[in-house]
Image 1: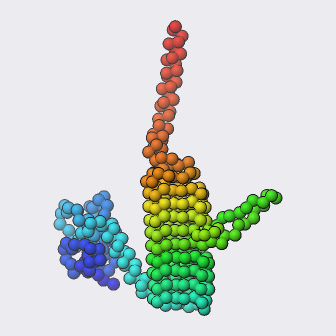
Image 2: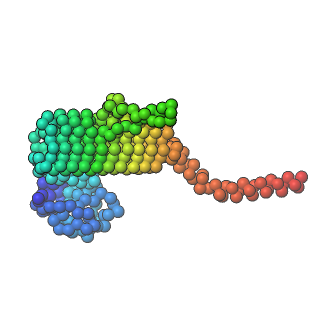
Image 3: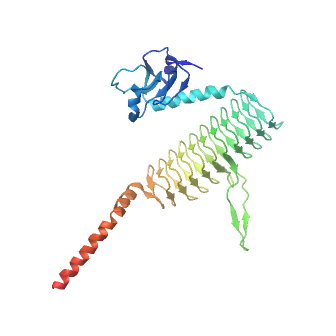
Length: 347
């Protein structure tokens, strides 16, 4: 499918500089793009490629000043990276919208409801009273348990498992292999030393606009709901425990874990491999550095922490700087001790 520079400019609200009728049919990195491809330039360190690339159309920032003439058509926008993301999203929508209907073989219970323009891939399973809203795409080998509700235009990638009674909002993307609604990790110690399983009778609620990466696990609540608020973005390989709440537009990077009943505020950023204990609160706007271990609540909004146990980011950097100087400080202390001893012996 071909698009002209003028058509793309309308999608990303850009200004055409060059030939508005030049067409592109695919994307390429600016350092290796070929004729007929579209590239973008957001990072200044790649600017030299602007003058050597064979790309036909390039999205650039409005503020870019050319050092020499180029042959490509430019699309000038306020934020090239954001505009490119918008364009990719539109391109992906066009591709997925072409998928409709039900492939065979599948299992769809007689009580399940499938909306208009939905797609159900081969070997998918839809249980009792499932509701698949308009425009939903369920790819092959997905499992949708009894009473699950999925909102409009949500994408369920191959191999996703959504257990019974969970609720998924609109425009959600769940990537391959993720498990939503598996049992929370709850056991009651017994007098004889054994562990009695605590039934997990709640569910998981995922609000609109959430994206969840591949092979992530979100446990169902013991009672009530594990809750992922609208706009949150969860990376691959995460463990979200029972009764956790993740606030609007918060971001969690890969291999992190959040223990049960912890409440994470909105616009929180959590780096990869961070670990958060249970039953604490993380204030709005907090930033948790990669591999941090958070063992107590972060009460002050917009705080930044690092380390294990995690503490104030600036203080941690100061401590690290001091730690690096410890060998030299030790030498100075030894020299001072020798000097003090020598002065004492002279008296």
